[in-house]
Image (cartoon, rainbow, N blue to C red; front, side, top):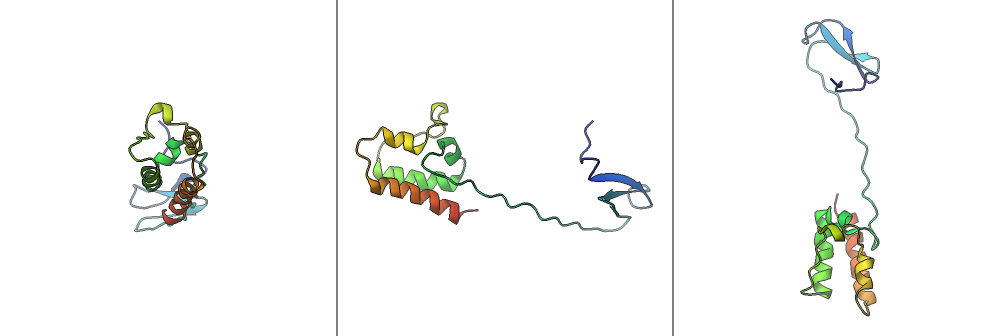
Amino acid sequence: MPRPWPTAWVRPCSGSGASGGRTWSRLGGSASGGSHTWRYRLPVREKPILTLDTPLRTLAADPGVRRAITEVLDRHLPGIPIDSEAPEAASVSLNDILGYIPSVSAEFRDELSGALAVTREGTE
């Protein structure tokens, strides 16, 4: 049975406490019976930088990004469904889609890029 923690981090040590005479030591410290609180800073997870070359699968995974992109696509391509969850679309990027559209305006590209930037800065 696998241990819940790597043995280098947590190891049983002797002593008296609420755990039947055993306390736990982490990195050389120890705790005995009573109430204890441990606080750890978790690493900040940076959002990936999204571009027009990011696969639709990645864009669709974030609800805020998906919503922002859908709004731009609906404004410029009304009535054309783009299913980002379809298996064949998973690795397709927005640039790939734009390549199939004749005479894509700079405004359309700018709005898509802007939607990606706003969602990156505006959501956590």
